[in-house]
Length: 91
Image (cartoon, rainbow, N blue to C red; front, side, top):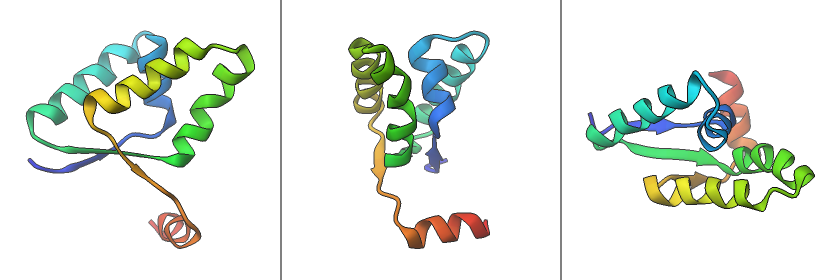
């Protein structure tokens, strides 16, 4: 495969929060991508969205778990700028 997989905020919420029934689906999807040597991506927007609740709840463990998943899988962080946002809107 050697493809690219981009995960937005919701899959990380399900994964880190271990929210059923999506938790296992996200794990399976990531495992499938790893088996196929896919590259994983997320964005700084995902960070901003994900951190809202943990900051409000002062849940620093949740924040650390999120960052651990990113590192463990090897997610590449995409910095979104205006040009990328406009291109995404066209898609």
